[in-house]
Length: 250
Image (cartoon, rainbow, N blue to C red; front, side, top):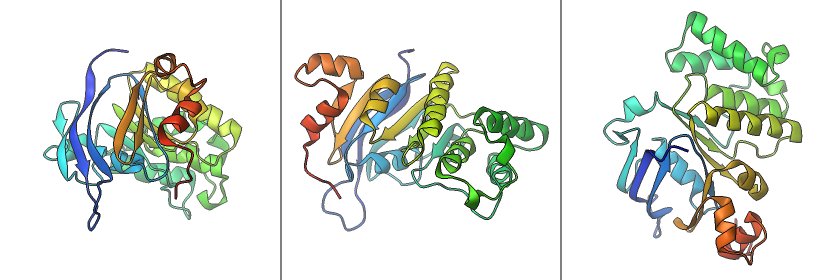
């Protein structure tokens, strides 16, 4: 991992309208080039809000964020071309085919003609979807939708990829394909910011993780080193529960 920050976060705070407590509470950290950075936390901890602010969907209430040297407030139009966003909810048009969806999203990023066709074909083959490209998305399985959703965020080859629960609710085979691809993608120089509830998955995949609760970062580091520093916990899931508690969250 090259120790060069591609994302800088300083005193990031986000209040939703009418809320008495912040969804993100004075977060400061750096995310480095070529790493898979896991943002882990219970429901309502602030994971999705953090991803939404970093990707420009919501403005921060306070603080500064830079991505590849660009400010998310003043350089938003430039930033959107160097980031890819794969939301937690599948963001596809169900009445269109997989191919039509990818053509639409590729056009949104200014891709056309031969380049767009080659990239779509490349990813459809990589994710085992070439035989289903002309089928309506509403007829896809959950795993197929997740794979197309991921491709839509990759077509413009972003420097930074935000993934919010990319493997939730899918079959083991689809999850394996996605995780193997993410490892390969990191080797090409793409920085990945990834949220998940699957602790075992994050422990194996991520170069570093941050555990967030009540909008605050309560632990950060390489999973292996975090466990060495906290030997009373045998794995990342135990550490996570030890730090965030075992009470149910809505």
